[in-house]
Amino acid sequence: MPGPTSPPEVDVPPRNGTHPELITWVERYGDAGTELVTQPDDVWDHPSTDHGQRDDGSSYATVPPWTRDESPSDLSAECEIDTSGVATVVDVHVL
Image 1 (cartoon, helix red, strand yellow):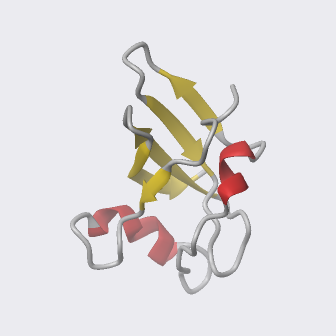
Image 2 (cartoon, one colour):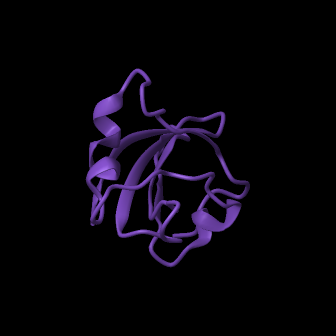
């Protein structure tokens, strides 16, 4: 299923933000951990991205986030996208 027609605005949890538990796998990724970088607009069209639309107009997506070391990484970021197109990362883990 194709991604959103325009890239959603993504609320990525900062290292010391309100949900630091979402960064646990990023900090443990690879030999010395890594950091997320600004995600390219075409992440929504990447072959590993999964996107689904709900009846209420909201949607969800699972994307392979870019890190300072890999583009994309073997991490997986799960996003909830509200009806206005704002995406919030709700989980990050290793694929």
